[in-house]
Amino acid sequence: MGITQKEWDRLQKACDWPSPDGEITRLDQSTSPVHTTFSVEGLNGTYKVGDTIRVTITARDHNNTVKSYGGDFFRAKLLNLTLKAGVYGEVVDHRNGTYTVDFLLPWQGQAQADVFLIISSEGVHVLNKYFESKPHIRYHGYFEGPGPNGVKIVEKVECNVKWGSAQGLWSKANCCCEYEDVPTGSVWQCERPQNLSCDYWVYHQHGEHQFPATPFERQLFSRKLTNVGIAGEKHIINVLSNAAGIGEPERCRRGLSTPVPAGFYFKDVWKSFVCNTRRFNSQQRTSCLSNKIVHFLGDSTTRQYFEFFQRNVPGLKRMNLNTHHKNGPLMAVELKNNIIIHWRTHGFPLRFPKMPARDLHYITTEMDYIAGGLETVVVFTFSAHMTLHPLTLYIHRVAKIREAVLRLLTRAPETVIIIKSGNTGLTAMEFGNEWYSRQLNTVMREMFSDIDNVIYMDVWQMTSCHYTPVNIHPINVIISNEIDMILSFVCPS
Image (cartoon, rainbow, N blue to C red; front, top):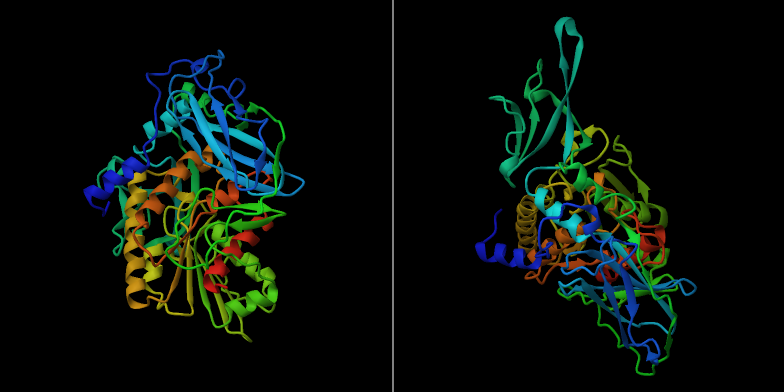
């Protein structure tokens, strides 16, 4: 994986998750979103801005029996729909069937708790059981070349990553075409076509989901048992003003830690506790981006940033690179103020529609070609498309990205490098799941925790506590607040 034993031990500790006490053989033994409840402590008290309030979650099975172990994955937030306000709450697992959430009360007015059971402890146990075995998705490769009498041949084959116990997806000897990215040591392999050589590989495409769970285990991920709101005390929490306030965050800079909560929404504006974020209008965005080269690397969630700038920076025009607007790569320029913005997906594995294989560059390789400097901004994410692959593979890839980041900072220490966490909202099993996304975020945050010259932007909290339904592709108002966060680090007040 490219890490030390000490770091591996640290990552295992950070990702540790409770499991059921014994083997679960009946669905009624699993956590029931119907019978699981939450309560708010001290509702008769008087609260001021800056106080905290505790919510206790009690998990029960389908027989309404309190669970004796932990491991359920919940999402919790406080909301006020009228004020368009929301704040994230971190769930603490006491490993005995009870959970607590200590919510900060950051706004004056009313608030209500909102708790969802995302995946039961039994479901998480199944995910842990299978996720290191092999990828849970197939991909397709298209080989195109000349055939007899000059007729073009097109052959579609299965492809996947070569890693660990998943090496050699086909049992035949000399089965595969292998494509190695030398800087990272990553190997992508495709089943050898019958008529064409490996040199004729042209296109990549996502394939079919192949989660290897048993029929019983699949029941744990049914729509009625996952991502379901649970019943609880819906009493209004009244919060009074507080002359002392909740403090003023410092100027945005590198090396700042991310507290819980990292901020809150109020009237649809993100109020960060990390640093003093600004609101940027179109003229201020243009001024901040003047003479800048911005590289967005990753997936469709960073493409949303590119699309936002395309809509909201006057004069910024997308160049015609003869690529699909969803697959990229994409480039936009604004000549008057010398603004250049790039977006490119990360390398394999990638669940995208059919696209040229040569357009997929590993983040590590792409970063090694960035000169960097005072006018260079790099924003990358690496999460959503790894949720159907082993955690050890993810650690290996993040380790290689970290090496590339350190090389870039060595040759150009003024470069602004922002790591965007994964979003909430992966609720359909064919695309991964939110619990595993959280584990990937934990790995990324831990592996960059000792590097002060990078910025970790926790959009997990920003996407999970908004009052609208969570979505892997957040609505524009959330994207706008994320852009303001990015620009606040590029052009701090």
